[in-house]
Length: 549
Image (cartoon, rainbow, N blue to C red):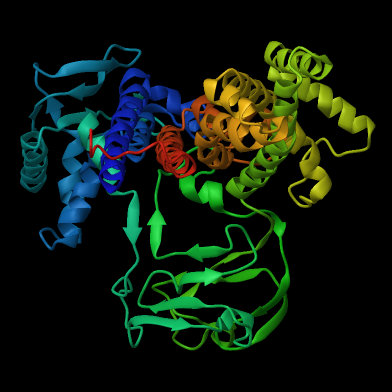
């Protein structure tokens, strides 16, 4: 069994790498990279030379290129002590007088057919020897590294410098697919440690307590806390899904650039939503503040120290002062899971007895009514019957649009029922089919001849064997709740995880596309492995061992 699981996990890891590699190739190599600017309001405001440098900076952020501007290069040299601030001014002057050789590639011309953007080598004219030295060094350094050197010439309107027409020199290099794949997988997991803090924070270390100070120190709530770590709380408990939280390992799936700019995909899925949630908060110094939205469990390290009124709350000299606020509604992934798990429970509670009834009453009224329902669900588009139930629910007074600031029981009723409808039909269909197949087996005829009642035959033999294939899909169904339901969540305006991927595709948010696809792929692999384990536990005839064969 262990050998099989290790082999299955290895195959799963390889499959995930291949899938993510294909997706990276599609979004970064086959799609026009300028599509990422369709939803960028800042891009449309840029003009002349600034447009090109803005594109390069954004392409670097998105993972398309490695980019270095000549000004940034000089700044780095100054930081390393290789050039003074006075010399930087002189070293930058030659940009206005440097010219391209005849071998340079002309990429853009202005209205007078003058070259304004070139790639290639340079003839350095003028008398500024210092500028010649550093431009030559810049060009040679990055050409040797395989970069393309590009220059944007000074743009004039008559004899006057055009808006955003300052000359620029930079180097860039497209990132290879393998570099992108390595960067993604190598940065997925980040481990917090006591050496994260750069300043003196006292005794660095990790401590454990049964009484979390965030609850005043008088409530049994185990927690692991760090000093010198990025997060003050490395593990803690609260009343919000998934109830136990950890910051020791940070998952990074890719930063969003359009949906929620600057946030990682995993943060988008797990951060609470809605308006601020106020309560009595106990701060690290023991001060209790009434009606505060601060979440003490999110304390993170800052290079600065507490000052002003924060000293009374966090302590004099404390670096753990960065904090997030509590929100009234659960995260995207929590809402999707709540809706999904209740729909799964409802599906099995309804489908299993109805599937058994259809099999036992084969070709009778119950079977025909069940078949009508199955055919209806299969034949009618899901959007159609979801809208039908939405209209029916509205007539009954149930809320049809999810309110992020309330999220009470009535708001979950229609999404849960709508999501359960197709699952009920599918379970009924397959359970009926498996049970009818079992009813015609020889062991059933033998059981009847042995004097067993029909009830005993159905419960102890037929149902047990017919349920085995359905059991294999239970882990996948449960884990699939984390993925969310695109159509259902869209119709009822549920801020879950269901629409993340489609929204990212529409806005060309490449990092989110890759991150969400990775999340889905990992859940798929885990669900398959758990399904194999569950089915082997239910049916002793199934073994993953090759011994004795």
